[in-house]
Image (cartoon, rainbow, N blue to C red; front, side):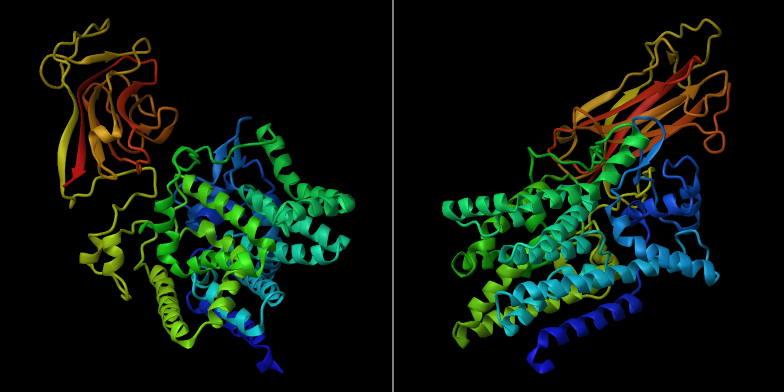
Amino acid sequence: MWWKRPTILFIIIYAIAAITLKIVFPQSNFISYDNFGYYMHLPAKYIYHDEALATDWYKQINEKYKSTPTYFQIDQSPKGGLIMRFYRGMSYMWTPAFFAAHYYAKNFNYPADGFSPPYSWALIFNGLLFTIIGLIFARKILLHYFSERVTLITLILIFISTNLFFFITLGNEVPHVYLFTLFTILIWLTIKWHEKQKYTYALTAGLIYGLVIAIRPSDFFIALIPILWGVTNKETLLNKLQLVLKNKEQIILAGLIAFACFLPQLLYYRVYAGEYFLNIYNDPSSTVDLSNPRFAYVLFGFRKGWFIYSPLSLLGFIGLIVCYKRCREFLIPTVLFHVIVIYLIASFTSLVSYGYRAFIQSYALLVLPTGALVEYISRKKLALRIPVYLIITLLTLLNMHQAYQIYAGVIDGRRMTKEYYFRVIGKNHRSFEDEKYLLVNRSETSKDSIPESGNYFQKELLSLDFENTKNNSDTKAIIAHTGNGALKMSSEVPYGPDIKLRYDELTNADYCFIRSEVYVFADTDISNDFFIVITTMNDKKEHIKYRTAEFKPDANKFIPGQWNKLVLEYITPEPIRGDEIIQTFAWNRGNQTLWIDDFKSVAFIEK
């Protein structure tokens, strides 16, 4: 009877609740930002027949649907032209939903352009389907070791009491909830294969693993689960090696299936980039620095720390201690996996998101440790259980409320601070006074501007009037903008003087604005990037953030024969080490002769 199987009832209720929340609190413009990058493989191939991005169909789509403020989903190909940066794996998961939506759009008067409402809703419900599949397999894994009661409590703790709840219901599940589901399936297949070495288990596991690496190659080390499952000492390791050798044909076929899943990505790179392997994390502002992992920042930081915004995720780690005695067969691979994943995520210079959503798929491996802890607590005296249950209940309610807060914008997507966090606990709206405690609001476009209402003191970085510079012009003598001197620039002398200093020599704050201005004179029009002012911050190897100002024919037009002012405003990216280099300079990129005068650069540092 159903009351003897409450976990089934929980799955049904959870599915209904998740669907209801998706409808009542719809995600605006689902195919945007990262999702735009994951998804564009499908319309590029099946609608616009342009995987090389040779036409501007994606720009027209963006103008219509406002999918992304910048085209960070696209990169320059080493071969020339453009490529889609994001991996193709999510497009595999979305393919059935895409074709269903495409059929619906063509037959029910919606634009069959790949981005109209039917496509968004199809992807949203596709995500819900995969969520329920993940819930089902999590239940199967738990019931293999624990009772119905322990399984029910554990499912509640994982699916309601952690930030997984937000990404399933009100947030964006891509790609991490999909990976969570794939991880749970892989764990279940691992359990079944170790019970009985069937080809169906091995080959399906190969397919699931292939989809994982096709979606996110950096998660390749989830292979630790099947490889080290059941290994607890030297004896079990030798037994595992014998088992693998005995079934080597299955292992080889599973590996070939996994490789086949990633092969289309390699072929795409080869055809459109001329190389089989590309590093898509080639942006210095969003890369991996293995020499500088920030563990406290990603785990306990109030910006987006995992254990701050999802404190009950700690239960799984506490449960690992219990597992040492209760169920050790998955202990070693689980511990190794989390050591690696925490180190990698802590080494990323970006990935800032609510509770660090990059950890979401890790919950699949915390299902069993959490269950072990629940079983352990359930055996304790009532006097101990009551305060534990009370704390868990309060933190669960906090987690659910915070899910709404981030949907409503009370918990900011990127600008959280410790002071602001404690000001908005329990609030459904944030006040103007609350907002003063947020981090600076950074532009999502390629243009920065200094807010007029900011409370800053100014620090002069550069001030050049060129009074001691001779105007050695072969064509004419000019009148300087101020005083008597101006600097002549030409193709022989393309670069003007610059300012270069370490970030920590400028300020200890997490940002500052830099405003650079220069007056420019030329006899001919130097619009179209012939002259630019540049401000950059680099890590001594690459530009972390590079911004330019230039004259344009349609805006900020250059007028020949008179002095023209050019201004560049720049907000520094978040420093990681503090030894990053700030540099500002002028560059004459054309063949024309021109003059510059009154070149100034000022830092605006928050008081």
